[in-house]
Length: 112
Image (cartoon, rainbow, N blue to C red; front, side, top):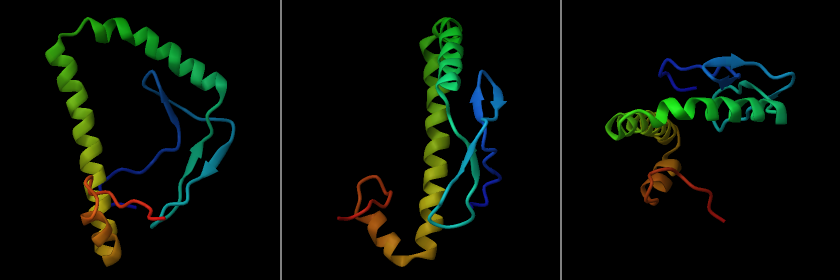
């Protein structure tokens, strides 16, 4: 697990609410401990889709600049987490560092 202050909570996030599923599965990360995550169901997908549809009018009413800033903030967080993860893995495995340098995205990929 990366030391970035984030620990997976294992729930779905629907309309700002953490929602636990009836069943869970355990992740199997390359390094670190696994975490339990709620299994999605058709009902949860429907609930999430309805929540997204309900939020659309508010999001659509914002300015293009505000929407762009919101999406850019999400992208920056994803990139920051990805960069920290790749750096941590490369520090532990020199072969992963070579693989990361050989890809255009900087994220190691499986070789066949």
